[in-house]
Image 1: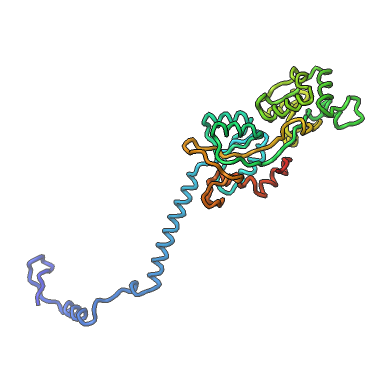
Image 2: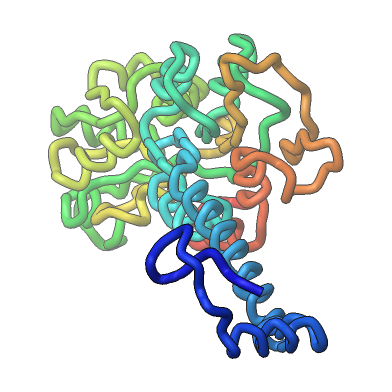
Length: 326
């Protein structure tokens, strides 16, 4: 037997090698040798594990990338909810929350005009109804909390000292009538949220119920929202102001009196899902759930946030801030 491939190139006649002959006979008798890796079950399992791990890592990386690129939930909330919403946003388990605060009236108008928003938290049902009429909310709103309307004065001011000291020579301001008498005598002014802003409307309706609206009007200094009123009072820019009971808890002010709840509409905070402009309006139940199975886990982030607002953790935070739970 001869071989035509040799060290001198193709076509050179070579002498058969004894080693090649022996190798040929061994293969013919015993078959081709198998490698240790092919016969080792542990090697096969290790390879499969590596593939599985790589697949899992790839999936985890993809999920992480998706979460990183997920848009935050946009919440527009009444100014009086600032601290509560910021605290709840840090505890919301289903994504990042981007919150904006202001007068409920201003926020509702912005939403109607197309401002990006997913959830609206209003200090008055009136502005949720405003958006409902504009076909801008989806499902039924959720009642989150209630509040009270109070009159405050700068800490250490004559009105504040009289309120804390029953033996003070100055008459104590205990209701809107005695407040009016004091500010008229001293030619002083009172801060109130602008007309249309819930805190301002509640105050004006209460004074109108008592027959004092016209007498107070010349003494009013309007502010853009309830937190602007709080700031003006705390800085001593005005003699007094009308804010919510929860606002008075976070500033260096003295509460002079609480308005009789019978003199104004009930102060209620509602949460509503803002309808996307490319979605048809849908009716929902009181929880805001719209998923086919009704499970919170299958709802979108806005729906889950409404459910979260009714959770024990959220209710505890609202209660701690002084809000009245429904």
